[in-house]
Image 1: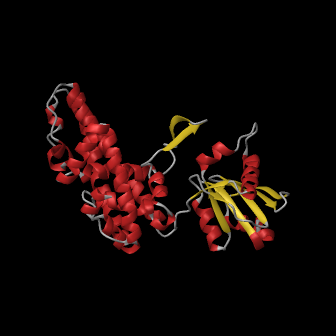
Image 2: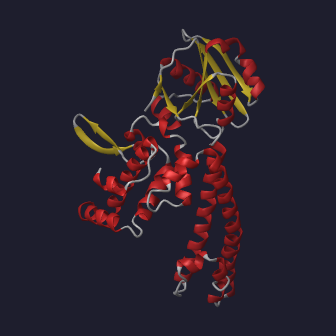
Image 3: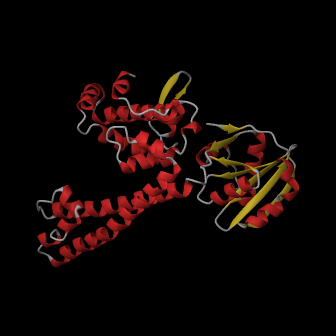
Length: 348
């Protein structure tokens, strides 16, 4: 957990929402000098903080509508701190909770140096990252439709088509005809029609993201693709979720953020298990989990390594260990700007 320790003359806590925001500004002694409810308007915010611009730091929680406020502060050289919403729950609590109280709490925590920081993603790559996440959402929706079709085959004890025939649009036309009942057939046709809509949409998004990636960081993407099994989508996911490896001072920080390792929970010398499973990037966790499986495809050395792990830890944990090892390799690959080395990977 990283805390912001900067000293300023004024501390501003903003409880920001979609249409309104509550501002609380404290001076260095902790006295409230502004406590006001405003609309989410750029000019209104700038006018409210004009008297304190000489030495002001602004803090807001990491929720869905912080982008514009972070960009506005950066544009006007105002220090902006993004507070980690999950960590904040563990720090403060009160009997009363409303926008006025929350904005005051943020300002007090900011002044006291106990604001847990979240990363403010760079504006240049942020829209493409969000577009990539949206593409992943659509791909999962399409996968749900295909899974429902397969379940329908199981329901009626019919031999289901192979995965390749399900993905291929040319073979889907004959799938609905496998069912005699008209209602069941129409049910499957509805899923197939939605799949036919998602296919070109996902392909178009992928082309757009690939074109944008060439302008952002093509060299890092090329290095990531040197990892065996690292395909187009996994490489793009790692590129845009990491953004820059320099934000992680240690490999331990990177693996923790990627949810590849768990934090120990102990008290009075007794180990009580692990904690923090939901702290970090779910997208990086997914990418490295998928990369671990793809890494083993046509890779005898990798299969032999996982086979040894499986005898000791079991199937599930052996893949988790491999994913964590890939996370470590990815960190040094980007940090040292060198291609993936299989011999070094198994030696480390």
